[in-house]
Image 1 (cartoon, rainbow over the protein chains, first blue to last red):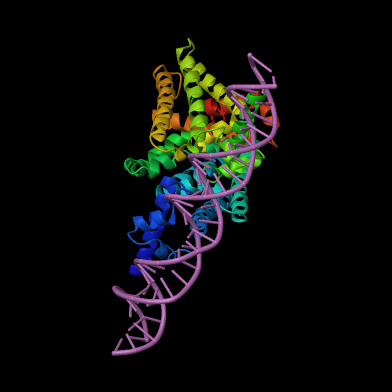
Image 2: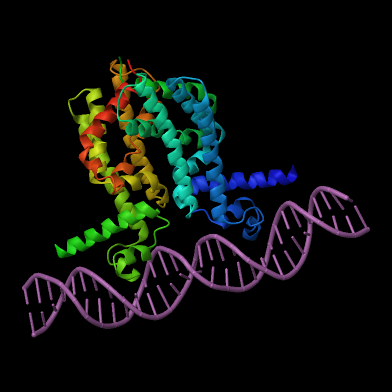
Length: 195
Length: 195
DNA sequence: TCGTTTTATGAACAAATGTTCATGTAATAT
DNA sequence: ATATTACATGAACATTTGTTCATAAAACGA
C-alpha cells in the first residue's frame, strides 16, 4: 500500500506535469522537484523519460480499443453504437482527462518505432468508427455524406473536452457529465440547425 | 526579389520543420541544415527561436480576428455568418495549413507574456463566435442548447482539417475545397442524423 | 570601381538535460 | 536481528542546444 501509493503518486504527478508543460518541456528534474526529491531518484520509478510517455499513451489507447470492440460486438444498432462511443469518451474524460490530453497532444514525441505503433492503433480505432458510420449510412440511419469527413469531424468534435476535465477550477464538469453527454450527442446527430 | 525570396524560403522551411517535429524538437541546427548552411547564419534571418514561433502564431491569429470582425460587421444573418466562418477556416487551411497547425499545437511553447497574449486572442475569437451562436439561438435560427458547448464543439469540429491540407500526398484536398466546405457545413447544421 | 548590405562561416560559451553509478538510509519481511 | 527490498542522494558524464562574435565572401547599388 505504501509502496504502491508512492508509485501512484509518481505517475500522477508526472502525468500532470507533462500535460501542463508538454513532454519536451518537462524535465526529469521538474518531476523530481515536484515530488520533493532529487533527479537520480526518478530512475527508481521509471527506466527512462521515453518509457514514461509510452506507458501513458499505450495504456489509454488500448483502453479505447478494447471499449470500441465491446461496442462493435454488441447487438445494438449503428446509431446506438455511436451514442455509446460518445458515452465512453465522456467516461474516459472524466476518469482520465490527463491521459486523454497526452494522447491528443504528445504522441508526436514518441520515438520510433513506438510512434509508428501508436499511429497504427489510432488508425485502427478510426477505421472502426468509420465502419459503423458507413454501415449506418447504408442502412439509411444517417445522412449520406463523405464517410471520411463524417468520421473525422465526429471524432474531432469530441476532442476539445479534455480542457473541461483537466481544468481543476471547473469542478462541475464531472457533475455535469450526463448533461454534457446529452448536449454533445444532440449536436452530433441533430446539428446546430433547427428543423 | 532575390533577398525576399531567401527570407521567404527561410520562413517556409522553418515552418514546415516546426510543424513536423514540433517546436521544442526542432533545433536551430535542424533549420540550418535543411537550408544548407550553418547555425550561425540562422540569426541573420531571425532574432531568436522564440521570435520565430511568435511571428507565425500572431500573424495567423490576427488574420483570423480580422476576418471574423469583417463577418460580424456584415449585414448577413447569424446562420450565414457561421457559414462564412466555416468558409474562412477552409480558405485559411488551404492557404496556410502549417501556420494553422502551429496555432493548434504549438502555442503552449510561447514564453510569457506572449503566451498570455495569444490565449487572450484565442478567447476573444471564441467569444465572438459564441456571440453569433447565442444571437442565432435567441432569434430561433439555431437549436437551443448550451452556448459554450455549442461554440467549442463547432470550433473543434473544424480542427482536424489541417491534417488534410498539410499532407503533401493529399494533393486533392485543395481541389476539393468546395466539396469539403459543403460537407462540413452540412455536418454542423444538419448533424449526422436523418430527419 | 567602391562602399554597403546581404549572406555565410568557425569557434566558442554557458546552461540545460537525460542518464549512470556508487553509496547510503529507511522500511519490510523472515 | 538480519537479510532483502524500496527509496533517496551527490557527483559526474556526454550531449545537445540557443546564442554571440569576429570575420570573410558575395551580391549589389552608386
